[in-house]
Amino acid sequence: KTNMHITDICEPDLSARGEIGQKESDAHHEEKSRELLRWNQILDNFEFVSRTQPGKISQRLRDGIPPELRSRVWREITQTKNFKARFGPNVYQKLTAIQSRDQGTIELDLPRTFPNHSLFREKQGAGQSALRNVMVAYSNYDTYVGYCQGMSFIAGILLMELSEEETFFALVQIMNTNHLRELYQPGLPGLNLHMRELEYQLEYTLPELAAHFKLHSVLVEMYAAQWFLTIFVYQFPLQMVLHIWDIFLFEGISIIFRVSLAVLKLSQEKLLSYDFEHTLNCLKSIPVEEIGENRIILTALNIRLDESHLTQFLSNYSKMIPSSYVDGINNSAFFKRNSLRYEQQQQQ
Image (cartoon, rainbow, N blue to C red; front, side):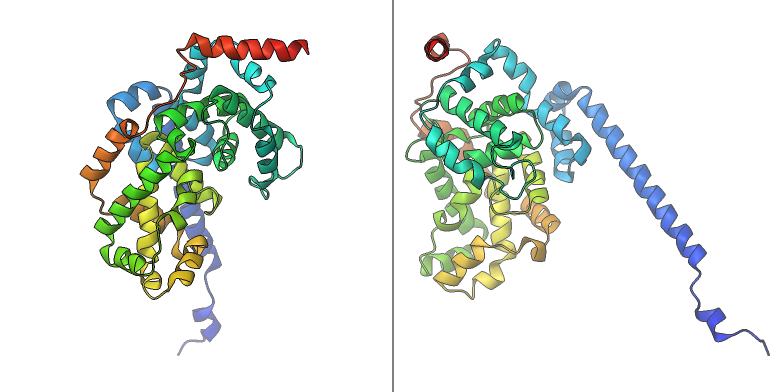
């Protein structure tokens, strides 16, 4: 017989558990260090890698950017430094100094943009001031579009990672290369086209849900317009939005179609049992935490789209919309006009 007590058998070996925990922590730290090293190697030669190995960067972005490198990655993707150089000196300062025709609307939207985020919470604080300046500058730069509700959220998310001036140049860049500008043109022509494409992709990907929506007169505009106008900023958790933006900035607006369809697919079982009112209530308050942010992203990246139809839509998109855009980069008349307005206001 042995004198071993029952507690000798059941008592957990805390020292062994501590060693396991330490090993796991060390392994996690080592993996994070390797990830940072891989990203820094890409960032040191980003322009070349993005041109020769875009798939490599796409995969890294889809896996997620380390938070401490996100600002640098976004800066490289949007090429704010090179883009700024094409404008010449003091352009941003001149544009912010001109009174915007949309000043009233901009002021109304400032406290409504990320009201719970520390950067924008304080009335007339640094965040709201920077957001005002960026929106005034953009509305003066692109007078045809001016300022439209939803744009402040786009600028706001950029301001979380970039400086005020960088945000302006990044905004101009993505508005014209990522199919955003047409979303905000008078009459929202780009938004209407995107809604029709999403409607087509919904019928292709989730035909049963598309038929259910049609039966209950649920139009895509009723729930998805805000997703496109704010790139999910208004409704979804910030960390998930940042991950979507990592992909969006490099790959373009196709990720918005993918995430939209992923949300619908993962909510399909509930939605099929709902009537008109309950459907809209559900889609306006997607339980992202319940579904899982990573699950939504993973589903979006693997969802079955009509790729050829989406590719054709995006390639022909600009041709479908009459352009009223004055190119501020190449059109000297633009700067002469705005420089004159600037000088006149400075003399008053």
